[in-house]
Image 1 (cartoon, rainbow, N blue to C red):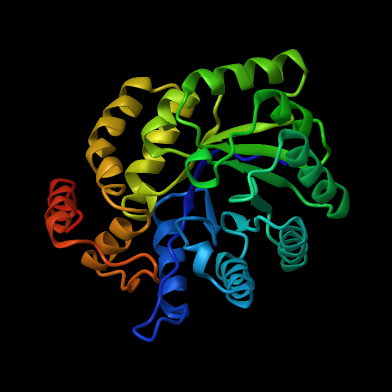
Image 2 (image 1 turned 180 degrees about the horizontal axis):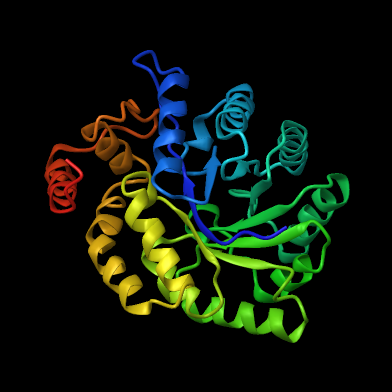
Length: 297
């Protein structure tokens, strides 16, 4: 199974009582679909997976699949630094009907390369569903090597990677290695960094799992679609239009600025959960100015 285009790493809306706001979550799903995105990811880093309880994560997967109802591709965040927990989440995502499971490289315990391979081999052999690896060294403390990526790309259920290493040269070498191993049609690369979406697509990437698309899904989708359709000038113009917002949304830890932006736009996603805290006063104006510049407020 393949994916290309714009997938949104969705925020998780919370109520004033710090519970999942199902009404707001469903509303956001429809807002994103109506603005042209190709896929939706729930319970990823932007969805505050680190502070979402196990049963909440499963509930978010269920709501996503129910509300999407086949209109776009669904990605279930299903990673953990425990292989057993990750496997249980992938099994749940499979039974719930998700199109893909996104499985982050285990964080904190910093597994060796052969440990990473064993982690994905076990999951691959235990569940019959498409799995996308998520490599994000800034969050996990490990950066999966190109050799390891090619080894797991050969597994039947491992179909792609969300690559958030900011080194474009690495993505070039991943794609070159996929070509050399006759895997380029079996394994796709998605950008894990909005500001590198166009550069990564130019060296073999098929799209993005996007944070900025939470806030401006229409322009993000148009940027990716323009590149896919060969209109490189329009894609570049949209990249630079969105670039200040891409940077502003990481002025503090993700998804703190994104939630502030969405609340300003009337999306009612609530606050972040501790240990994340609301956006500091000195950065609020930066977000507000970006939204005004893009006519989003």
